[in-house]
Length: 499
Ligand code: BES
Ligand code: MN
Ligand code: ZN
Image (cartoon, rainbow, N blue to C red; front, side, top):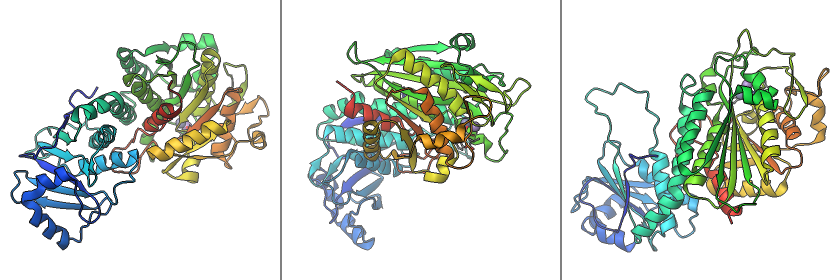
């Protein structure tokens, strides 16, 4: 992955070309290596800082072209606030801010990984590097025209200057580059249009994980029929593209340890089916497989950093289309675990896909826990907007751990209720349940249906309809899809489930 990544770690040395990016703490306090490198421009920096009332407040920026006595074309000073109390997420963010100051046409940039107190530690420098790579991501593979006189942009070569360069490089390669690549893999899959990324193609791309030691198993339609996955198959039956389930396994833990399991909704395109969606904004439904993309990106991250855990990733890939063979409102399907569901609205398809995949993973792998991710309901966007994902679960400890991991990665989750009181909303006249629960608490009744397919296994459902698509622009993401969830779940595993 990312063979064209131009990122190096080197000891502190004044660069003689490109952009130099340094950090300073409030009161215009630099680290000693930085001060030494900037010495020829000292008076100019002070004058510019005074003129712009720049003191080093967190996130503020002082930008100086052709700094006196330095050979670089540009000097950028980034305020790091009071320094000291930074968390790992802050280094990621600062890496993103730094990368944002590198013009796309610049040939090279050097980032001094140093605060007033001295050089960043190797793992802090690796977090900084992670921020630069997430920020640098662009999805432009379908742009064939450039502006007049513009050549295909060469990526700038980034050097991170740090005291212990070889250890920083090791921390990057062993623990943070795998995460960067996992997030980028998820973003690529989500941004990809549905004429390119349909279920079989999605399954084929999962095959790339094999070279990292992940086993990848693909269930085709006959295999799923045999298993009785009729809820999932019903969603895909109106499409010219065959459905697939992909199961990925990474065994980095002890032989007999039960695996942790991640399940993703992989609706490659959601037209709504016969209950067709309005035209406006429907193009966004190419991203209705963001949950599945996150699972694949996470499996990449875990395998590439050789995480000491047994993990299963399973995705249900279908296309929801209106067609002569499509499922109708009123149809009744029998799920793999023998329950019957009356289809009221064919646009409530995600829960049907997940029901069968959850049951399959639960019975086959007997996991320690299951976490599913799905762009499941518009209602969760109404409830929480785009900053928090909705979290539903039957296990307080797992929910608490996710809440913490969310705060640490800024991929935050907010717990929502479940309870038998909501069950009557999905009672059906004709079957065991129906697939919609009416307008009230739409995200809850969806989760309530999923709960019927997880038995007693600790389980969390993350409704990511608000966080995964049309993502708010941040310092570490400028893309339509943020790859939300890869860093969150990687953090969860890293904190609690590695031996
Ligand atoms: N994929 C959609 C949910 C969605 C909406 C995701 C907007 C991202 C952005 C899901 O399949 C869906 O259509 N849900 C319906 C359920 C309803 C018919 C009960 C919804 O939320 O309107
Ligand atoms: Mn839908
Ligand atoms: Zn959907």
